[in-house]
Image (cartoon, rainbow over all chains, first blue to last red):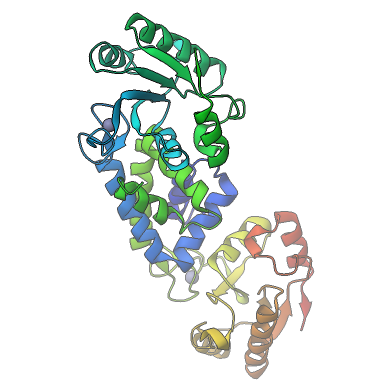
Length: 198
Length: 198
Ligand SMILES: [Zn+2]
Ligand SMILES: [Zn+2]
């Protein structure tokens, strides 16, 4: 392999993908080089384009290919409902599994002071402003049922209370410590419908 | 997802990787977009470069970053031993697991007339010429222990016999139907040392 520096680099680079160890990275590299150069070239092209062009919506912070995402720009979504999720993948999971018609706010993580992730890193100043001025009647917490997700939810519930906005939280049913996007649609729809006031 | 055409395309493109279904492709795409843009950009760059620059050695047909691979160009390798493998990954597996010091010939597949893969597609005309003229004393068959791999081995053994070259085959021990690069090094070293005359 030392005689194939480019192949070794490719194997290393593939390990940035979640769940890919050294053996699978090697298998992927050889598969592309030996049997699917077209697929490899296409993946390289789209990957570069997506990394460069996919940004975050300036209003809700979800992944977007325009300054304002299609959800925030849609006049038929109900602006009195605001659902807070940790990641853009949570937005997609809820859109696919439920008939929710409100808007979203994406934190991009959970409060974790030891890792330097405080309210500002999650855009909670922006969220607080939106709660004060934007006609939100119900804030729905869909943060993960982890310790940090719970602390984040508590913090946001306080912001909402300060702004006089009602708060609900989606029902547990999502497995403890699980990522929202890994939950099957039925469980997620059930948890969403069963959200309770905090 | 229809509002994120580039993200959908990225998820589709990731499915060219072996063992990656729709759920893992989605997880990979969001991981790169949300948490590791640098890793994604680096992967795109190296992937494009590897697809463009990694070619096949003109003598042994293994993956190479020059016209002649480092193995064929190495004067300390023994040219009287020639090991035939199906894929470049087989070369790497044997190099890592054994103390073999001869040369290689990479078929790029197995004889499969129904799929249009005949002797020419595997470079067997080039191999036949090399057996006639190049001072090969022993041809070692390391094709896979599958039906098609066995038929391919039979065909090559006949070429070697016609050229007056002795033929051995690595010992079984490699699991039936298994890919050479998925076998642990110990098993492979044992199978290699235990090769028998055909
Ligand atoms: Zn938005
Ligand atoms: Zn070579």
